[in-house]
Length: 135
Image (cartoon, rainbow, N blue to C red; front, top):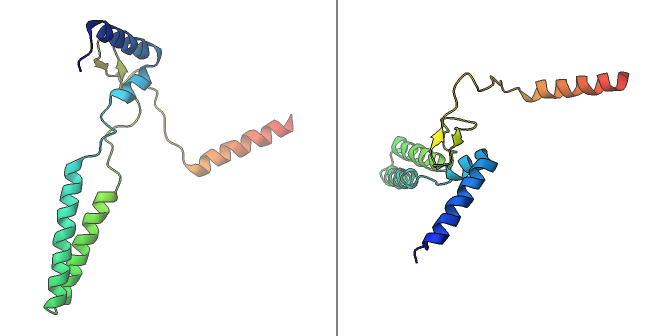
């Protein structure tokens, strides 16, 4: 059932309000990161079937190298299905404008943050606690 004109206007107004209140949330909600690619699972399933067939044929024909190859193919297919997808970019992708388009951040406005390792963060905490205790 389609929305009435009034409902569409109210919905668009709510979207604009959300975009102006919290652009990062609006950007997260409009990104396509939530869906999992189906083709990845189809290819992994086909690879698992081929690997299983190679494993069975290798065992039936007493060819251990063919069985080992089948196991490796099957393992690689299952591992690729369960591996986390690669992300090309991290962090905010930009700000969503009221008309729904995304404004990309420029390189000069983004702060150059470097990820710190676990140990360096622990050392910083230790130093802060030690300096707070000196007061």
